[in-house]
Image (cartoon, rainbow, N blue to C red; front, side, top):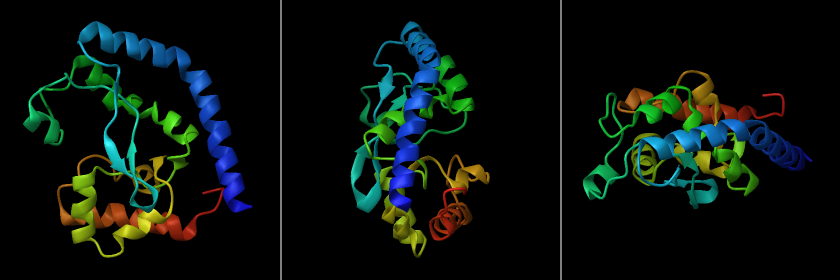
Length: 178
């Protein structure tokens, strides 16, 4: 019953969100296309449930680069690759909105541990004991760690531990109201 309720909520909520946000989706897409050449969406590969790789939908916030090193490096504060539109959509997490399509595809949930990049996932595994427990459930568009301020760059062991502990707490205490 619990799984059915969660899945039903995810589907209904994501359909509603997509329909309500369609004007914003269109405006963001037009702004991205007017500012820089390239696709509207960026599809990074992340780690999902049971360690499966998923291609996450995001609005593109950076200039397209053919430089392999640019494609590998993490974003930093003041990154010159981020467009003006990208700065705005990142500030308000609007770049994450297309992930409601991942929820409809059954790859993600509305709430759950955020899916990490493959290299970051490996670093967390090596640093934080119990990290892989996160992969027992679907990743989410937002998670308990993000709601509690643990979003953005993870550069220190303390950040790794804090984010993971919040994710594990959520998994252990999950209920529909939470």
